[in-house]
Image 1 (cartoon, rainbow, N blue to C red):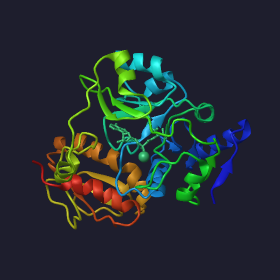
Image 2: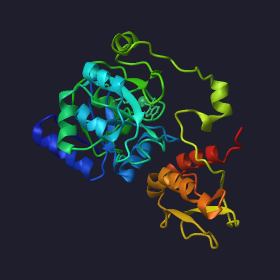
Image 3: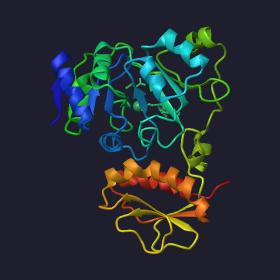
Length: 323
Ligand code: TXA
Ligand code: MG
């Protein structure tokens, strides 16, 4: 059952409490409806991918009540400060390096060292974010492959029964997703056109690049190499039935014997827990294995059902031969 909440203070407080309890709450923004979860709670974020039926982990946008709150989780530069002053709250998402103290789960950022942040221009969304008091990860509130929802009934048509609640915020004013701008490199790069035009951005920060176009063929030939996807440094071997002397182990269930270094994804073989820990696991093994003389990661079999599909998608990209 998905509850429809009204945009009143007590019902917004109820929505914030659901988020704090690790539940999914859809809410309106000025662009499209978002499917929100506590960004610091990996298992809550994993539920987003389950509800959307996404076969892979894409990095999600984190929503904040203010630029100050957003800039506590990332490392802003002068351009980001100028853009925030000009366009926030509003339909602009900035990709910036994660701050050292960033509490956003690795799953929300799909393992990347950058994080996409935005402050939405919508009274109810801002009230929800303020009442919740933390970052809310929210992709568009539609099933994977369907169009982005701009009314509560669109949301319920796709996600009814799969989420705890939707806040009725009426129709969205912009109806087009936010502009995504990567500010983590030497020059700004447009990753997705959206509610703020390139001309408007350029009036504030000067020329904006549009990035190297990626053709379908290239994208499919080297999916794990896309800049927007994290790949671990160490090679990965899937479906391991035994651990070699030079391998660290990524365990799922009781660990195979003999590993010098083990990271447990889920002792009780729970796919939501495993998804929540996946990127943390890869980062941790990358950081600690070499000092122990380990040069590869062996992964125990993970079933390709539900979230297991997305986990195996990410791991098989990591296992693919490197060019
Ligand atoms: O208008 C919007 O942006 C809506 C509302 C709910 O805020 N949200 C939205 O989220 O459209 P989603 O998940 O459907 O799109 C997020 C986009 C994707 O294209 C994703 O690849 C990109 O942002 N993105 C997120 N984090 C990124 C990162 N660290 N680096 C590069 N791209 C990133
Ligand atoms: Mg979307």
